[in-house]
Amino acid sequence: AAPTQSATQKTIGDVTYNIVTKANGAREIHITGYITQKRSVIIPATIEGLPVTEIGDRAFYVDDVADGSITSVIFPNSIKRIGNEAFANQRIKKITLPNSVKEIGYQAFAHNKLTHITIPKSVQTIGGNIVIGNPIKTYKLPAHFKQSTAKESGKLLYTTFTRYGKQEVRITGHTYEAAQTKILVPQTIQGMPVTEIGDYAFTNKASLLGLEQTKPAIQDVTLPSTIRKIGNHALAGVS
Image (cartoon, rainbow, N blue to C red; front, side, top):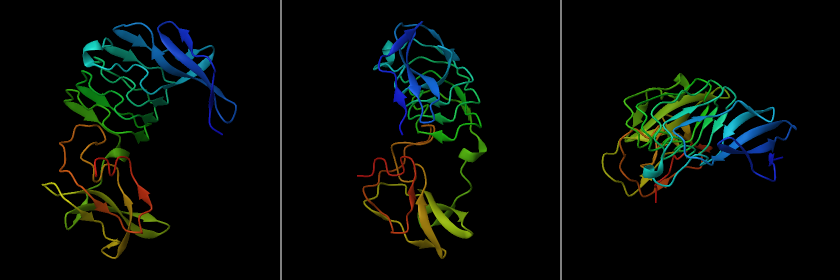
């Protein structure tokens, strides 16, 4: 069963929130927005005696960067998810993400003033483009987000992995330097079945952090029947 939220949005200090009841009956707090323009935001660890576990989608979002006022955010160690565009278009200069965070949503910190970001090892899911539009100079990613050295098959990049004792292929990208009308993904590479399309493999619209240079546009990708999984934004922008 999907989590249920309190019928009425509540307010404490400068933030609004909902009480969410999970399928197992546990209750937690999700921050949904803020009501006053402040330079510094401190997210409380608990509200009404319940843990604050999530910053909701667009909770601190503003439409225009000129309207952004927040320059710093302090997160408690209870936060598990930071939603899509949660702090987009603000003026945040520095953040420290706690080791409790498991998910960071799409463009969560887009178009701020960050020059560095460290993604803690606890994070398992990144929605993509999380710091696009920031003057990032340095960043740190956990090992499980770093791509293994990819091999080449024609213009396709791929890695291999083991599933149920058998080697399979994951397409991770391509080396085309110009826009392509059509790409055909084969059923096998080196005798191994092609079963996955990795995150951002064919997109020219997104990447993990949003720092990479834009890749050439692709109009059409034909996938084989062997494909079992397609990753985050793998085909975003493919027409």
